Amino acid sequence: MRFRNFHLLAFGFVALAAASLGRAQMAVSPDKPGGVYQIGDIAHWTIEWKGQSNAPAAHYTLKSGGLKDVGQGDLSFSNDAARIETRFDAPGTVLVEVKWQPESNTHRAVGGAVAAPDRILPVAPPPADFDAFWKAKLKELKKVPVDTQLETEASGKPGVAYWKITMNNIRGSHIEGQIARPETGKRFPALLILQWAGVYGLQKSWVTDRAAEGWLALNIEPHDLPIDKPDEFYKEQFAGPLKQYWSIGNDDRNASYYLRMYLSCYRAVEYLKTRPDWNGKTLVVMGDSQGGQQTIMIAGLHPKDITAALALVPANGDTLAPEAGRAPGFPRWYFNTEGGKDPGKVHDASRYYDIANFARHLKCPVLIGLGLRDEVCPPSSVLAAVNEIPSPKEVVILPKSGHQDEHGTQHDYDQLRYRNWLPALRQGNPPLIEQH
Image (cartoon, rainbow, N blue to C red; front, top):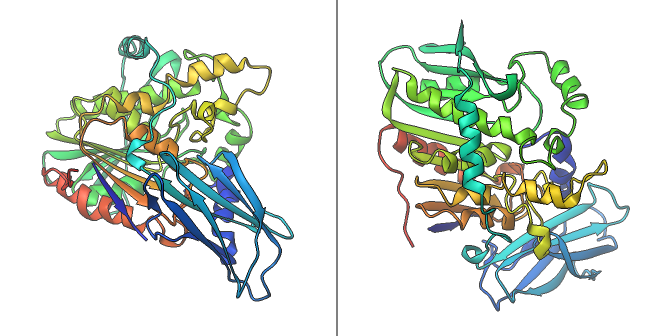
């Protein structure tokens, strides 16, 4: 496994994105630029005030695993800089949170670091019947006729053919998406693109740009919704029937909202395999956040045919992490027990959708990106899943990145994704991964 050190969701994550930026008034940095330490190391942190006025009164909190409060205090600035220390006594991450007056989402900054990233493991093993459960769900899906419907539309890009696609899914639901490929040529490598959280339509460029490069590109909606309605339609859905969709059925493994979403991915892979314009060799899957969650899931649920998986800040990792004092990945399933739900049932159901429990089945090369400042999909939640993957993997640790690409903080992952991995895979070559 190779760890590399380098100097997206709208709606509910805007506050966290703003917090990680701190309006660029406060910078929180460890003494190691890459943010990676060994057990027993002491991290020396510098908190630098970058505002026009004198440094304000500020308070810091240390959060082990992004969750457990392990220390706090007031900061003392000299020449607009303050310093604190933390010690790593075990594998794990630490988040340094700084707030200043008047407190608000924009008067907050964070910094992150990790020790022994390759030794962070999931809190719990998979359920004993995990594989049997998903085998039964795939049987349920197989009983549903696919009934693929393709609707040709102008691609808006010269040399690219484009269709909208609809397929049947379990329990009367549907899969909606879009597919594109070069107009000339007979057989192409396939790319399945999966979407981050939220309720929104799909942009044609998400498949046409890849098709222009030579891919047979399929992009599916995570929801049973049309892909090209006005923005107001999706806002109404997210405020109405799909409000906090991640909590729907989350106390029953057979009723979770994620069940049809996960099976949508499986059927999408199966569909690509049937197309005569697929080259029969290369089938890549990629996505960010919730899309990264689906990427790791489907590469584990469908390991034989996936050639490579590329996941940036993947969600829903280590769902029982709070039992060890660590923050779980979005949607923080562990804490979603409102409405009189039995916490025990919620926690048990979450284990069947935890990407760490799919990760152990991966057979393909994997490119993973994670941000040390990420509070939506905390780095420990990603690493817990990553370290279960037995196949070759390249893990890109982004020390200055939160969940989104603030000021290009995810640039180095995207360079690897778009200039290394995808071009090599498109040409039928394995990505270059340094083995450790």
